[in-house]
Length: 278
Ligand code: PAF
Image 1 (cartoon, rainbow, N blue to C red):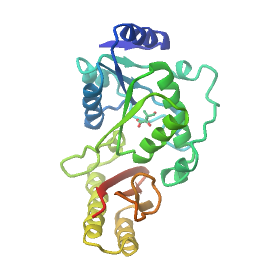
Image 2 (image 1 turned 90 degrees about the vertical axis):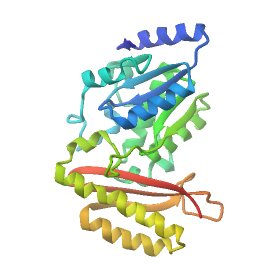
Image 3 (image 1 turned 135 degrees about the horizontal axis):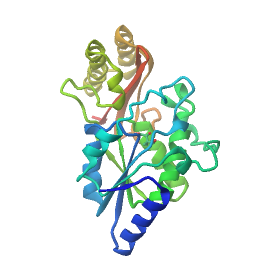
Image 4 (image 1 turned 45 degrees about the horizontal axis):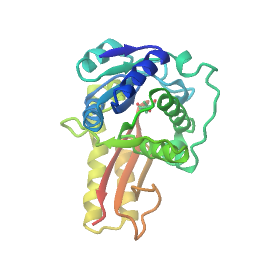
């Protein structure tokens, strides 16, 4: 496994691979690696000859009062996990990624302003900005993202389309704990008791799915589920939408997504369930 701290190092490595006609799959991360990331790496391995993981806590996707400073930075553990699992790890610093400062503004459009984009208006612009820069440096054939951040996945697909980038975007299913809590780096912030409470998020989303499949009215279900969620959490949003467009369900909808974001104390949890319309 090659460690690259400089853009020039990773660029040279990728150029060498290109000369050898190797394809490259890329898994961008902010570190704090867990089973979810490892599942994305497994997908990456199946899609290309070489796998590159980046570890970069991107300041532009954090709001002023968010956890940029306290975000888990576990580089040594992450590298131990990645060793013998991937071909290269790119660990740039802020100067490498934003040599001219971090003021560049990208607007990802409407899809970045709904759902999580309402509560975190900076978030998707920051994600699109850093992913575009990382794509420019790594120039992968394939990039893999998790479905837990489903809106992020669609924003990135949209960006790739808008910029006509020749990169295939793959995604990996949500990986859950035994108690069905969606695995996330930020779960580290939860106490034992909060973990127990947090499991109610999936339970409630799963209940909605079962009821929709029994042809129950979505509006009624949503109201009931919002009430249930509020017993445990401060509700940010709960939506039942078309999974391809993140718009209202229509006759053309093939897949439904139930998405929610909630606060448990200061920790914001997101989760979703995708399923075929019955
Ligand atoms: O999902 C993440 O970990 C981050 O948003 C990403 C895609 C690595 C960009 O910083």
